Image (cartoon, rainbow, N blue to C red):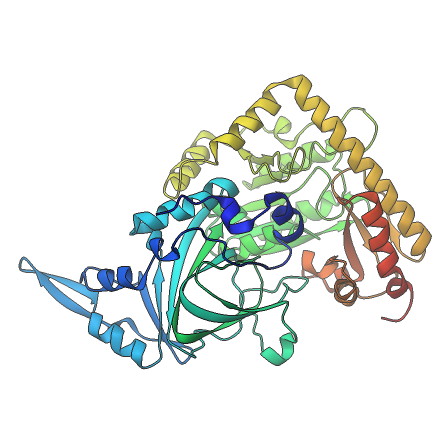
Length: 517
């Protein structure tokens, strides 16, 4: 079996992370070296299904768009006088396949060593958990209607061929219940017949559809499951608990609260920031288990919470028995000239009310996916126990780089100064371009962070984002950051690109931002 590398899947890594990762799908022909069947083959699947020990949910069957009940392809077997229930019946699997069913093999990396070796190159590079699903589809059959997945995927064709259609992810990305039609999706971004060894990359939320060709198709989907807010939230809240969130607030946090089964309770932000009277009422009246804030350059507004407000909010949370989850990932990205910054919320917490999360991915380099949690010992132990059930740690190289940068005060200060200076210059370019090209838009110049929150002069942010995408500019509409309908009049405008790209982006959207859409 060939030794595989991450570059086999993506080619030039810098191009992948700059142009494709989390942005749009990518195709790589003949990407996998050697024989793809060394990773997984039909022969290997035949051996597995005939072992008589494979049980659902490791194998699932879909016929004509509907899942086949497990009892339709399983049976009981007797081993040494003991009955083993719900083992897969090979003959029933073959019969369903001949009838046109897609056979799905889930989490084969739990079973097949070659699969673990292959997926490890992704886990180590991306600092994520990986899971695999193998799809065996009969000729000319569509396994599933057009849909998207909530995680990033690599698709590897192993045997046979499959015709794929892929569309760019919509802006904003749609929820798990989104439905698509081929007519509604329009012309695909990529249309290709995958052959053995070909690879596709799909960012999360990418609509796609596929049809097997020839004698059938065997392909592998590798799902990247990053450490998410929900991993922490599952330790902090139970289903139906109330969670206070900022409005507007971070969309990933909002989705994570809902995914944990909790109920987000939005608390509006005013032009001046956090209304402590409103937070006090919400804490008293809704009895939340958790309250979430970004005190440093809040997403998406860029607001900075005053030190006295931090002290008061921590006291309010402690008095009501509410855990306060504080996101400090942007805390180092002050774009004002050097001066005293507010103390962190945890500085006012004597009793374990505050849980803090941080990362170097925003302050130092986006590719350095290393973060941390500061919390009580019991919570840290619980999170460690949850993590070791999936893997042990982020890649060692990334940890060493982060340790070197954080441990050397001089190096850390130099890198941070460079990032701040670059961020300040790019912010100023964006501010100047907006004032020149879109004088009817209103905004406050952010003191830090990576984006600007702009009111689009009475126009719909959702419609503007859709128009901007047709002109090659990706923007996030305000409606993505909360359920308040008034947010649709806003846009989040990042200033993370080089100055010439920022100016060109504003130039492209300006005619639509000041005139008819």
